Length: 235
Image (cartoon, rainbow, N blue to C red; front, top):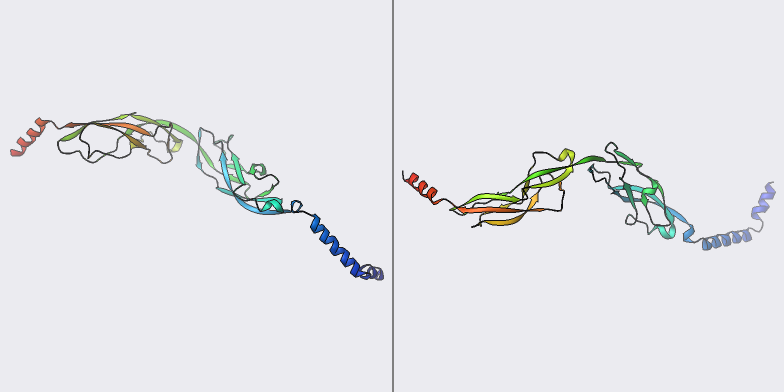
């Protein structure tokens, strides 16, 4: 038996080695990069789609997830986090659900590649019901008029605006203020536009309206009041 194996491997060993090397060269030549596959890990962005309009995202999930991608050697180097991303569809989300599984089909990848593994099996997020409310608008007046003038009235149009946001962040006693309006240079009744400033960064306007018209009614002080003040001072 030993003699058999000895003859098998050592007899004409040079020719056998040459045949092996020739076969190896032919294999390497004929096997194209398209037929050789490779794996690599990527950190890719996680996108949230179709958040229900009556809900607010209160606690966001991680901005990225780690995935293992398999593709041919000719394609693998072209696959990066720029052309691969995960999509979590929240169309059927509920207020009670906080954990959402991640599946391979949720990963958008170039044709010819496949997802082998997702390191995070699920992500957590929190949704809250949206609330809308009409809030009063208050003009933020700064500065002082020149001597002899007074602000008789400040009108705001519209006097209220509709805002919306997470139910826990909307308070009934909130007031929407305008951007600061400096009246120190005004000498007569003036009407102008002012931006709206919301009382909480978690709130937003329910419409495209972002400004209000503010009418500042300016009048001269009553001359009788002036003379009365002077008489009082003399006494």
